[in-house]
Amino acid sequence: MSILVRVEFVVMDGREGELLELVRALQGRVAEEPGTLRYDWFQGPGYVVVLEEYADSAAVVAHQEHVGDLLAKVFAVAEMTVLQVHGDVDAALREVLDGMPVGQVFSPLG
Image (tube, rainbow, N blue to C red):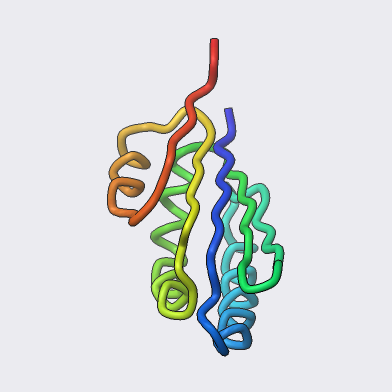
């Protein structure tokens, strides 16, 4: 089962241009990740939503390690307000998520 991730960020005033540059850099790196199936950013007034899909928990952990330096820069220009992870999350991914300021994990039913 794949892992689905939904993230929302509120962009700091005047930092939209910086965020756009970071998103482009992230998308370039993510294209190199074989376990990343989807990585789409959407913009609303003052906030952005990211929809991600990964082959499995290991692919999410690999993504965090691969783009961690860029994500740190994103956190400097935008505040993460929502983090939802849907799927069968293993212990390694739970450890990564425990370090996040917000987050919810939704396990499959049945």
